[in-house]
Image (tube, rainbow, N blue to C red; front, side, top):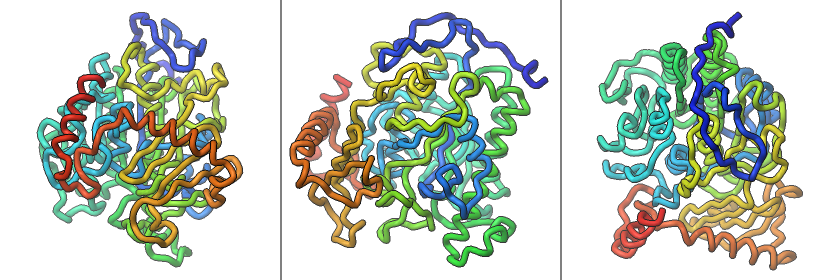
Length: 470
């Protein structure tokens, strides 16, 4: 049996404070689990089988959903690639430390070195840590993955990368550039499986960050042939690229099975934001139905994503969990599962989801979830959502718009603005968002990576003050 290959890794008992005052606690004799966090890039909400998608088969993701918990109200803390990743790796809202937008060409832009990553924390706890894929959190030497807690890195530093070899864009193994000849998504699956194989006898943390299905739209002919009935060429490319990512995820899950590690591995899967469907984004052929909005908006289509969690024997299989959760929770959950004591760490804002997903705590994990993206904002509290979004969605001019109020239980597509009927609810939500926003700082750079010149001195002073208290 594969289970005899397990290497038992016992931890010294620690006291873990669990969010929500749950009675759930890991056994003091439990093995420290391996942790795998998989991130897709710019995925459409409708484009996976476990959300009812029919056009693009995703058998490996569907199998992951069937073996774990599908969070039907799963969110990310930003509608853009880099801010979401900054939130995920730190476990805190990225607006707390100014990482509100994608970094630009300035080498000093990126995840502030003052922030501790999940890789830092797990490495200190004895985990072997690896990143395979997209970084997009800074290009300077001190912001390189190997300087941010990752023992091993294979992938690329920026936000987008070609998939076909020979186009001049570099791939790195740690800090050394390497020649890669395989289709990039396949190469990332290969390297992730190899990382697991190398470290099967010690606890490991693998962050597998695909660039699929982000532009450029480049697919292999043999995969394109599977979707020859899709007339739209961009959609056909997208389908082939999604299929490639699903295959790579299947390779990783198969490696966990082959090495006898599946039962002792906590796996998360999310997309970094919704599919880019607006004309002002680099569209990729994705579909967000039934959600309205797009990547780069605070509507559901920008921040509500596929969200899966699997840990056999600890979490139920095939469960749909309906309460709102956010990618910040993955960080806190992984640390709790690993036995890392985070008691008193006020920087971590996510919630340990294990007692909630296991059914030991029936309360909502969060009183509210929040978003800030330039002039756009949102707060979700229960079924209510107050949002200001980019009116390009509605064919209007770019910029801020008036707040809208939606009841998501009745209106998942955010079409029926009920702010006139529920003015007190809107005021209540705005007040809660304003209070949350007091702990944010001005962005470190602008939306397209440009420096912030106006009010720069005041912004720096506020960031310095926040750094002392955060």
